[in-house]
Length: 419
Image (cartoon, rainbow, N blue to C red; front, side, top):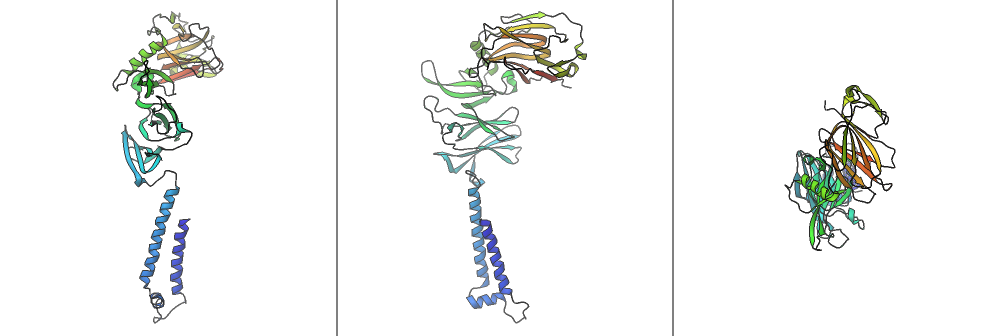
């Protein structure tokens, strides 16, 4: 609306000048408009125009203030932002700024989270917001932003200013996650960010180590450190945290304590839960073999490995071994399913969840499996029970095959050769 006022002033000035000049052609002796104004009003034309210019400048300033105020609830002029912290990585910076002229809640300035690539334009990812009764999705200060290993999302934590609970957990921070492509910002897990495990941590890559308040066996306050998967599932809880700890060994050890004695980790040995039998060769050359699995035609010469749930009995793949693994999560297991591993995969594990709201358990099957037909003896006590077979390829990329008793969908994973 203010922009029209500026236009109106401009028109008014133009009309004034035109009126002063109206009357058609004048002789050289005719008085100029400035002389007419000076004689009629006693006001020099320079002062008159200067007044219009002052009004125009004041109006423009008013328009700018109104537009800044109306552009968003917390969208103040950039000059009000103060850099609070910078978190730098390879080719990017995560910037946290705050606007001390506004508070999202008492004592907490509005915070902003940006990502900036190679010193270029800043992109706003998140900012403080008060969502009233939805306090778990309210954001106060922004702390410890962390870029995911694939560079597609940013984890960050916010403090407890909006927490509406009491007890030892009332001071816990909350972790949120922002998808960079879509700017979708959602709640992830309770706790503060201590470390994101990178690809050097094998099966635990992309897991977050968080810090939360708890109580020990004596009822005294303490801090514990849950290890959480990218899906938000708690794997184990660490008692201590140091930046240079051997996290993979410590997590493995915790899983052994949590799940009981593991299977023999040598894929060629017989352990408590695994049995292996060599299979005589059927004479088929796998390099020229083509078979259809669950509607997908597979030419084995094109792939480093193919993993199939419920391999067909009429298949002709030349397996070297038949393996049977009894899932230790179900000592009285009675169901079974088959996973065909054609080629070579690594760090093979099974994760089991007996029902929707229960915790998952994870167990290693073998460090390496090659050309084996694996039978898993397990159980599905509820309709929501699920087993997940997890493994890695030659580059360390992780794959999952979910197995559900109530599902007719069967997985086929084909891993291409590197050339």
